[in-house]
Image (cartoon, rainbow, N blue to C red; front, side, top):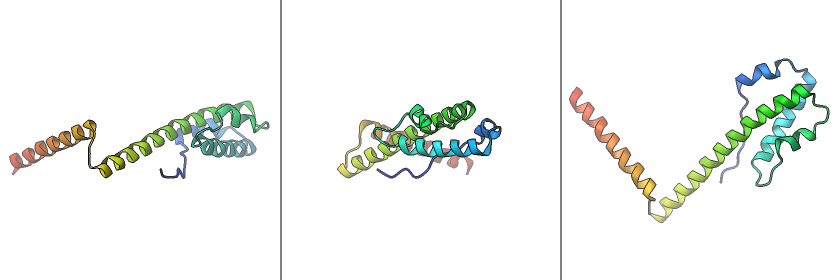
Length: 124
């Protein structure tokens, strides 16, 4: 499985952190990195465990951290699912056998291509 090398910060989070002091923003960013790294571990820290390691965080910063860590958690789960899907696909290709879902997707793709080609014939 590939190594996860990033996490996202969303523009819609900016209003949440805009009112924080520079010190609190620094604590928040550091906590987000800690959580993002922990989120990919088999037994990682929870959001609350990460927040506890930053006692200087204000209540506002803790709330922002909870919201933003929830986004990181969602994105990480989505990334892990994609990685597992890619690994399954490679296994299927290596064995030469497609699952029934894979065969169904192939049939759908061929049908879509046929419809597209039929449209092109009508236009010409």
